Amino acid sequence: MKQSILAQVDIGQQYLLNNRPVDSVFPTVGTLFSTILFNVYTIIGIVLVFILLFGGITFIIGSKDGNKAATAKGKGAITAAMAGFFIVVFSYFIIQLIETITGIEILNSTL
Image (cartoon, rainbow, N blue to C red; front, side, top):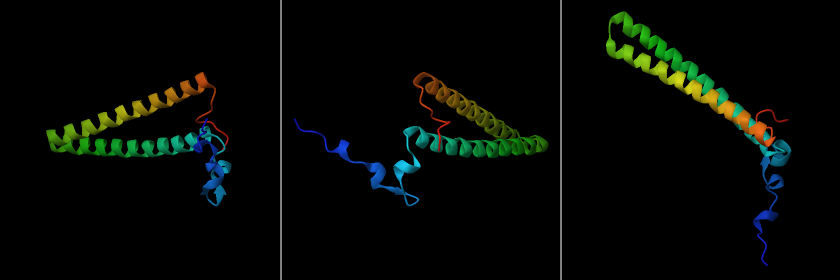
């Protein structure tokens, strides 16, 4: 029976990250996902704050000038930012549920 050669390649020692083998930087898949998700949540949080600020300023300026199109644009941006916020929070709770069911630490890994 022919064995797959792909299973015999140790990519953890083959590739370097900051002049260290990848498996020493990310010893488990959980540590890799933890790092990625932490950065993604941080970036999304910053983007949501800017969208909320943009929507609020647009809404205020549009209502001051009586411009209904600008007011609607600001209201739409605020609504989209709040919907995005709830999606991010919901995804966080889904990850927590996956951690509980599988017992694998995804967000609280030892890095």
